[in-house]
Image 1 (cartoon, rainbow, N blue to C red):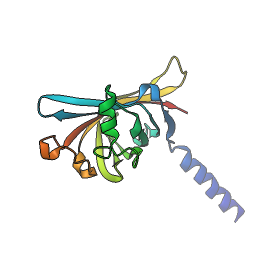
Image 2 (image 1 turned 30 degrees about the horizontal axis):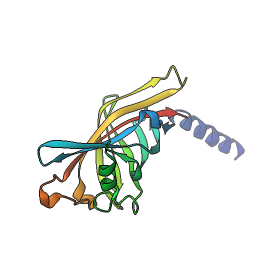
Image 3 (image 1 turned 180 degrees about the vertical axis):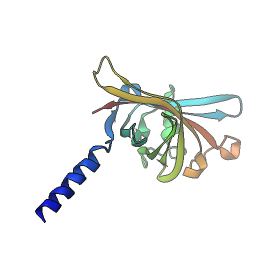
Image 4 (image 1 turned 90 degrees about the vertical axis):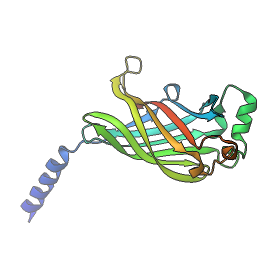
Length: 190
């Protein structure tokens, strides 16, 4: 009996030894930017960014799996114009007093060969959650000569229908429903 248990324990150790484990990464806020853009009466494009964001990434290159969890402080919206920022934070648009955080949680990394081509997850905005796929325009991991640690990151984008989240301001006037989201992210291995 003792010999059987020892053999089972050895088999369990050997079978788990080959399993890769996901590495943990913390979002680097100095190299991470969340921006959006929306057409303005067909004449120009309004753009803004969010200055406060935080999150973490779990990534296993060998298994081609991972998880992303990024929170955006909606009160940190920055269009470069204080009056416009106040309107963006108002109940008309982001209702930042009631919904101070937006969150993207992804549990599926999509690969094209060995390169990340997208992450699929759920975006919560204005208290509503919808599926969103963020396409990777580029993605890489590198050994940072400054941090002396591995850093992974990329440039991701998606177009969402803002009305699916209840952001309906200006639709009756002709503002588009579609909003382009761009997230440039770098995360440092912990």
